[in-house]
Amino acid sequence: MKKIMVIFDVPDMTLKQYEKSVEDLKLTGGLSSSGQLYHVAGQDPNTGNLVVTDVFESEEAFNRFSDKLMPVLKKLGVTHVKPQIIPVHNIILNGSYFLYEKSYAYNIK
Image 1 (tube, rainbow, N blue to C red):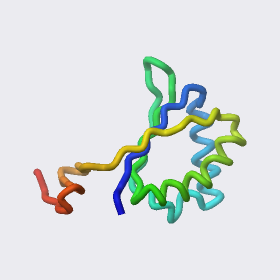
Image 2 (cartoon, rainbow, N blue to C red):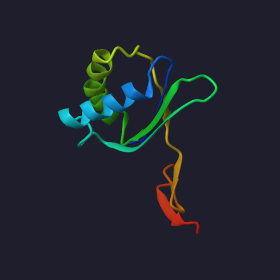
Image 3 (cartoon, rainbow, N blue to C red):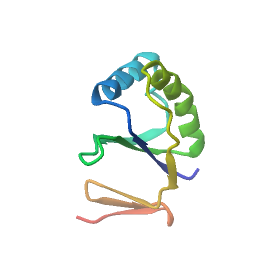
């Protein structure tokens, strides 16, 4: 399975709506067993947009997660935006480097 990076750039989502969406996903079990490896969110200081970047085990895992996410966002009144989906080339986490194209990992500390 090819890991993917999914980037949402949402122009009308507030931090309050974001936090509520996370709470709702927790309550419905949408965050467990989703195949989501990493999640980072922040508000762009230039545009005010909420930017979310996730890494998933595969595009199939993202699609399963999306089936749970979209009803939550709709309920909160968040406009649907098409995410950018990019194959993961590598991940550096706490000084460990994982090159997925070559299927090996090593410590760069």
